Image 1 (cartoon, rainbow, N blue to C red):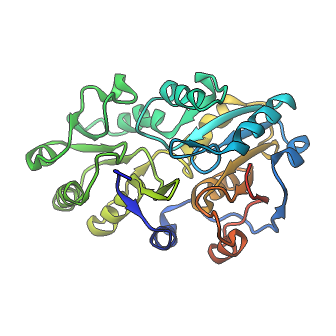
Image 2: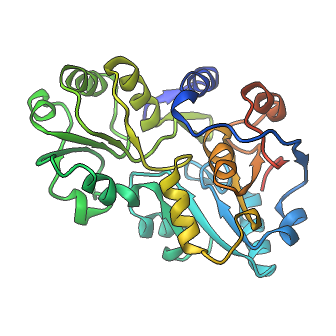
Length: 301
């Protein structure tokens, strides 16, 4: 992997250490183990899909994902992807999935990063924003005028607020610059991707959430997180399907601290799949350990 990486034990301990910044844990339930989503499609009207660990591992397709999406559509259920990917816009994300064999339309992708405009608007006092991203920038109408932050300390110090979109070019040298500037002068800090890690074939990439929580611990600031498990992205889901009872919405994901806690905190049901973050591990034991329990567990979607 060319991006920053993190091992499973470090990722799990990080999620546990930073639980105080997440939504409140939902009331415990006793998860039902199922073979796959087809078993419970009669109980739902809408399926909300995570991508990494459910549909793909990095650039590699999870074969069960292709079959499941076909089954969801054949059953007449509506669906959407809800992703924390802050590295590209929703149309580009949909196109990437089509290249992997999925049939997602552009409008079927909801990203936490799409909330960056309203997040920035909440800080009218900020005159100059800095941004950590890759090109082309997602949400270009909002982000195109922001100052790119890389290895120039003066650039970090000059901006009045910072937006952290993606970590593809991130490293500890850049992390030190960001951490130092926000510790010396706390400013609004918006994080488009709250994930600690994302699963790939052979390991995990360290994501903006991991680096941002570390900064929050040191600088004593409260980042504004935009994606799962935080409320804004679930508001977008409810706005997309306003007539659907949240209990008839099933969110499918691979990570208790993002997909499960987020869905259940917002009234939806959750299916945890073991094809991503918890692959090869006793997922129920880990869920019991952290007290974040899904409604269903399956080996894959």
